[in-house]
Image 1 (cartoon, one colour):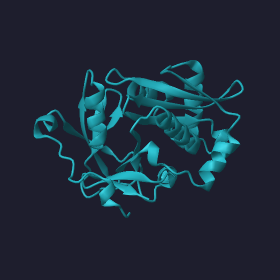
Image 2: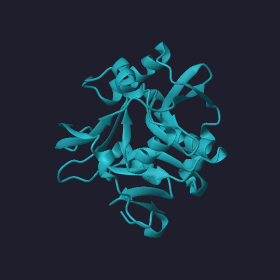
Image 3: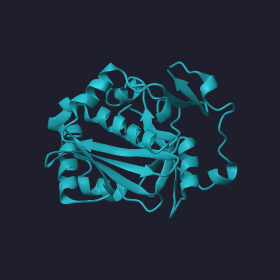
Image 4: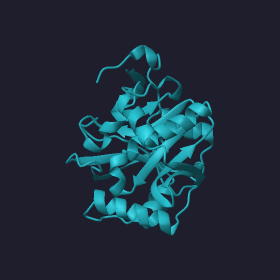
Length: 245
């Protein structure tokens, strides 16, 4: 990875000791299949205002239900927070092609809904991606998506009456946070993951939202490689958001 340090913060972000006291560590297996123990530095909250949530996102934290966490795995720094500045994004040829071939897709912004339709689509997605079936669609919604600490909504993608995909997103006037995206596995030819980021970026640009947080990027991880193609983007490296052109 190479970074343009002039595009990031002049000094590393410093997480205050007072705030850090709210967090503790939890140990589990690596969720990204890297074959080692994962350490989640996490805390539960009842509610966070937009500014506090935005600050935690800027520090590299992610949301899981009402829990905010970051990875502090010993000997591993592969999980790198990634975000975009919508006003700087320049789509490449493939991204323009994906946008063009999906002009028949209707986009709807709506409240987060644990509907039967959404659950059925998520279960098909999980059954394809995670055949071992450790978690079901309902547990994803209740444990991962549904929250009281932020303003959360969904972006629905449809072709006619068919539900193509659903993005779970946290939002405020200065940032959007992509929590999760699931889609119809039979529609993979549409490159729905790319379409979703293009759509979120379009929403941000049209509403003058400063940052679009895309979660983690892991170098060489196949399911995350498409994020790297959105340029320029910023990676949080050693506490500094560094632009990657």
